[in-house]
Structure formats: structure tokens, C-alpha cells
Length: 614
Ligand code: AHR
Image 1 (cartoon, rainbow, N blue to C red):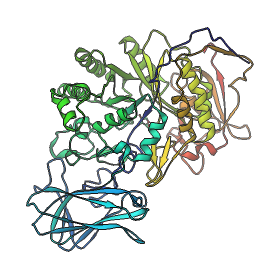
Image 2 (image 1 turned 60 degrees about the horizontal axis):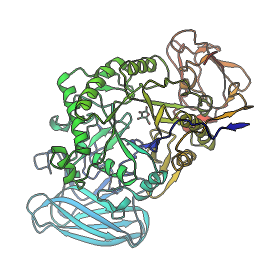
Image 3 (image 1 turned 180 degrees about the vertical axis):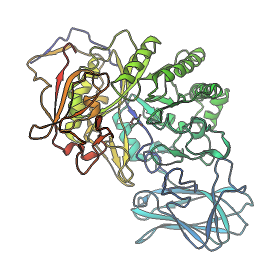
Image 4 (image 1 turned 120 degrees about the vertical axis):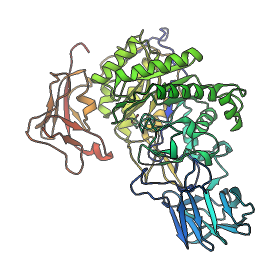
């Protein structure tokens, strides 16, 4: 039975409580939300991005062509360009099965070209069945680099299109682009409509961007003005604004090339277009996501801090300010109303992180006292790093702490009360990333149950976002994801529907309620089990993983500080057809990981004994 006391006043729920987290993972940007249809438009793909890449990835050449990296380039940030021989042509294969066009819709072609005058570029859109639009001719009229444009109207719908450029005379080409006119809200350099609309339909309270591991990885030392535009440099917001042909591409942490066509200006604009509070995250000079390093360089730290101040000016400053002027020049004289900013993501060196965070925060608060500077709690939701991080956040009176966790649906059911015991006088929580392992209905259900716990604690949990948001089905690094797509279709997960339910129906205030006679959530659990569910949870005394016959495979009594899974069967143990259980050389510490969507198919049983008093 549920007893509700309508007169009692529970926590106020902020309109911004539920939001989205966009990270360029699973090709969520290029080949995804960013509407560009040409892949590798500036010939910058490199083995630094992905071992299989070349500067001509996604292109085929008929005739002669060479990618050059010399003083003849378009500009210093756009290193490569293509030298196409007279009478030769070049064809792009787009993303997934090709270039997607829809009958009757307009597509804007553009290219930067340099050639002897008299050279004509013939641009065509075709698929295996023939022409998709009337061909266009572009006369190269200037002696130096210049931008040329043409517009196609598609005569047929196809997802297998190819864009080809043929040159009558020798020509240098760069930034070969094809953009649908019909972007979200018709914004230039805009977003793919169906994907943006799916995000808009959620009515998110905030948009966290651009990462994730994308933010706190890469070489922090290779700063944006490093010579030769070093790849694998950390994500720098200044690299991502201004004319697209001047945005140096970079290696994406997730194993591909990122064009930065979807950059900070576009993120802010998208947040504004969907009525969401923008919440950018900047790197804090401590690398995470498996690269445990704190960069000790005062000058570099100062520079990153100054960049963060410049970012706030870019978002909020008057058009007379240096960075506000750049925003205005890009088409948005009005401010973007930035109020919250994350410093760092999942740093697993909490002491080093806090030392740097404090310097960021001091500088930001001195100049912009109204900005909420968000810290984080490290990579896990439990364990020593998490505890130390939280302790430091509390001691340093941090306003808000970003927590992340990915767990089994059972964990979400069992941890509905997670925030009931959080200190009401301490930092607020930004649950920046969470998801149960799967896109099935039961996952959505478990997340929904968990979200009632978030909402009940809306005085402590101020912001929450499922992660990751997007996945292109042909380029997946991380699963599950909320919205899936290819080059012509997109579809929602059960998890999306749960998020939508909560975001579309944000209450004003919690109405306290009591439930009696509810079944205990503890006891034998069938389905997925994982390290972060069990071994890192301080809430349990004893955990056993058994097979379907009840034979104990793994156990941990949590007698020590660190989780020590013990093999009761002896030796190493693994699940066939997947690396879900990894054993170290000593065969003592075993990690269960959920690296594959098939994870939930294994019939394992876990039994946990809840610690008394928790
Ligand atoms: O959401 C996917 C990844 O999970 C994020 O990049 C990172 O912050 C977390 O580990």
C-alpha cells in the first residue's frame, strides 16, 4: 500500500533536473548529429586517429590525385589538401551505406578550390541506380583559394548516394562539403533534423557537452597552438569555433577523427534551440579514462584557466568583449546565458584534481561569482577514489559534484535509496552519467524506479542525465545508448522513453509518500552481475556469484579495503564467447565487465548480504 500525504511538502524539483549528455562517442557528431554528409571532407583522416585511416578514407579517385601537406595548404590549421589531376574525379562514400538524400529536398554543395582559371568542376550525386540530382558545374574563377557553391535538388530518395567532383583541369581541393538545407531549425552548419528533434522531444532541462572521456584525455601538453597541429591533443573549446575550414581536426578519444564542425558555438546554439541550460565541461589537466596522469605545468594550467574564463566570456560577454565579439561574428550577438560549468571528468587522481580544480574555481568565482563550478567524484561510484574525492569535495565546500555510474538493472533497483542518506549540508549532486547495462524494457524499468529515488531527493540531486545519448549503429564504441541511428533512420530505446516520461513531466515538488508491504529487493538475483555493482559497493558484506546450478563461482566478503574477488573454483574463470570475466596473472582479482550488449544473456546469479545499518 502507498500512503500519500498531499499536505506535506517535500523537496522542490528544479525544471532543469533532467537533462541530456551529448558526447562525441559512437560517431554521435560527424556521421551523426552534425548534418554534414561528406566523410573526411578535408582529407585530414590519419593513422593517428585510427590505424585503418588514410587521408583518402571514404574517397575513391578515378585518374590521378595526391593528398598534399605543404605550404600550398588552405590555412595553417587545415593541413592537408587534395591535388586532383586534369580530367580526374573524386567520389565520396558518405557514412554508413552512403550519402543520404530525399526526393525534393535541397542540398548545398561547397568546396574550397584553387586552379588555373578555365578549370570547371562538375559535381554529381548518384547511386547504383543512376542520377539523384541534376549535375552542377562550378567554374573556378580565382587564382588563389576560394570557396565555390552549388545547390542540388534531389530527384530521388536514396541512402546509398555518392558525391563526385570531376575537374576539367588540374585543381587543388579542400573542404568538400554537402549539407542538407533542411537542418534542425534551418540553422547554417546545423544539425541533422531527426536526431535533433529526438533530443528536443525530451524537453531536456540541460545539455552537458562535449564529454566524457573526450574532455579529459589526449595530450594536455599539446595545446591548440602547438606547431603542426598535433593530433591527440586534449579537447580545447577554442579549436572548435570560427569558420569550419579553420577548425583543425583532432583525434577523437573513441578512435576516429573529429572535425569539430559541431563545436562550442553549435552546442550553445543547440542548447538554446531546445530550451536547455548549456553545461560545458573543460579539462582540468588531470587525465582520466585509463590515462592516470596529472600535468605539472603552472604556465599551462594558467592558460587552461584563462581559456575557461574566455569560454565564459564567449558565452555571456558583451559584443564589445574579445570573445563576445567572436560569438557575435558567428551570428549570435545575444549571450547564451551560461550558469553552470564542469571542470574535469572522472579524474582518478582526486588529490591532484582537487588542487587544480580549486585554482579554476578561484579564478572563475573572482570574475564570474554567479557561475556554479561543478567538480566530480572520479570514475566509479564507490571505492577509495570515490570516497577520497567526495571527502575533498566536502572539505573544499564544492557546490556540486558530478557522479557517474553504469550498473546492472538489479543495482538500480537495489539502490533507489542511494541519496536518502546524502548529507543535506554538503555539495549537491550532478548525476552526469548513468545507465543500466542494456536497452531492454527491464533496463528502462529499473532506471525509472531509480529515478523516483533521484526525484525524492531533489533537494540533493539537482541534475541528472542518462549516458551515452547517441550511437551510429555501424560505429559503436559503447553500448547501451539512448538513441540509435544510421544514415537515414533513427530509433529510440526503452531507456529513451523513460527519460522522456520524466523530462516531459517534471513536477514542482516532491509529495512525501510511504509504501508498505513492498517485497525486499535483496535476495537471489538472476541476470547481469558486475564488478561495479558488487565489488565496489560499500553497502554489502558478502557477495557470491553462482551458476545456474547454484555452484559458487566468485565471492567476496569485503573484509579488506579493496574488492578481492575469490575464485572458489580455483584458477581463472571466464565466460565463453566474450571477455566478461577477466582474471589477472595471480588469478586473484577478477573483474566482471559489461563490454558487450550480449552481457545480459548469461544466466548468472548473485547473492548479496546487505550491511547492517545501511
Ligand atoms: O559515457 C561514456 C563514457 O563513460 C564517458 O566518456 C565517460 O565519462 C564515462 O566513463
